Image 1 (cartoon, helix red, strand yellow):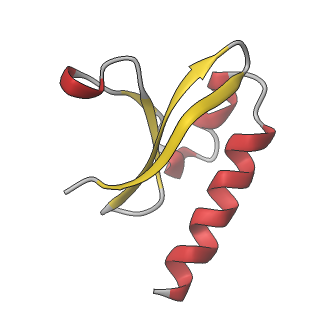
Image 2 (cartoon, helix red, strand yellow; image 1 turned 180 degrees about the horizontal axis):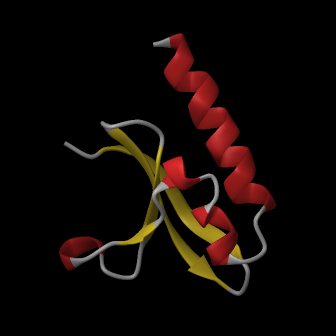
Length: 71
């Protein structure tokens, strides 16, 4: 849906601008979390209930960024 694209672009811009991982805790709707099991070492922020932006964080930057259908 078009609104999904707009939110995804906004969240990707926020991820790109971040210099510290903890800044991604705001807004609370991001629901920043460290992932487990097969995604250990990655973090995610929510686009919506279904979609996440998953990434690895190192030295103040996000790497291996992907948009994932989490369910």
